[in-house]
Image 1: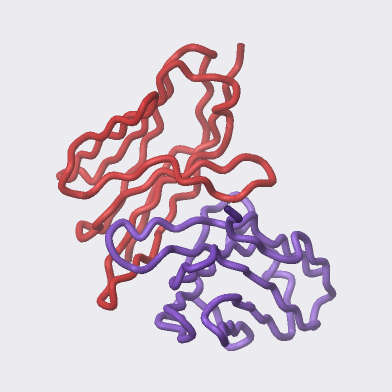
Image 2: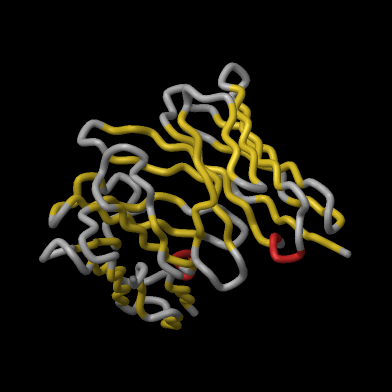
Length: 115
Length: 114
């Protein structure tokens, strides 16, 4: 079956612009996570959704970052007034439900470049 | 806070065993994971170990956990060129509400040469 998909695969924008990054989780997965991976680093947690609600947004770096999941499936990560430091690969992961090993399946990521 | 550390680079000869090491700080970690990342690809879960286990073997992969020293290792037997990738160690903290927040190390780049 289909895995986690993310669009676009690459996004180049100018400093100060607004961007949206989309994540399509595996069908039936209720848990959805966003991570950010800077160059040469491991992924860092941003936000976790259980269903439609953001249960933990403690990793969002500041209020320029916001994410939604209105119908409990597709999620959009929104970044306002982008800065060069926002350049990174944004990874989405989903899991069947929180519990047990909660194996998270990752998408290929969106590479965001802010010029 | 939580921290996961790994050596950054490992070079091995094809056919030899590779051992990638990781240390973590959160003694309440429930599960520890090894992920593989190939160029341009997402993270692929290789294996995981529950924190009350010492060892787990899965085909060519052996995971050893020393909970006292908070040390985790991944051994790849008969390393092949296709194993060349970045390997991430991750710990999970179990939160009320039953979800895992993964804390990753910076990754170990494994280079396999003939």
